[in-house]
Image 1 (cartoon, helix red, strand yellow):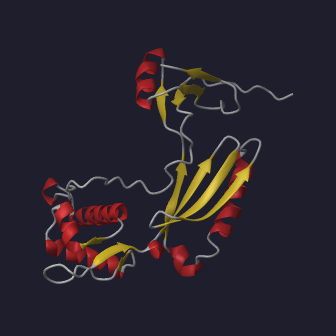
Image 2 (image 1 turned 90 degrees about the horizontal axis):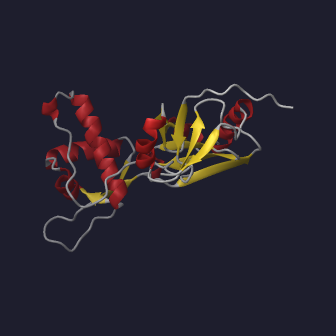
Length: 232
């Protein structure tokens, strides 16, 4: 007979309809053809922060469009051609961008598109599910390079940590020393949730989650106890 744990009555609202593994790939939202706003150095941001922001902006644009010449990058961001050239050269030297074949047939010099170098960086994604876990390796272009799946009855901390430790060795074995150094980090996927401290918080939390949800305890409630379905 398993002892029923003491339940913390403070609660959180979790949206069950969205799988925790969704959105593991880098979240770079840059859709649309409207010019994106570059960092404004006049707003108190230091020079290193401005440069890092603009580098991420260009990487996001290139990932969204597949490849872009420098002239198009300047049009979409509003940055000067000189600034774009400096950033692109830096990203290319660091291995994040690769040059593609020049585009000929237009007036003036051929345009040289730049695309992401898939081997420029790698990211690890971890999903902790109720009945299974997933560990995946993703390259800079967003492609899943390798994935390990593990099914279990219940995700005990010790067993899951062992799965992650063993999986990290297995999933990165094909990268080599240089590739391992380019791993940028690990992200853990969770379902969207909102903190609920009382009944008055429920309507706003349900509206924010936009759908049916589960009201569950914040601690010791993930064994199936202390959970209630809620509809708006």
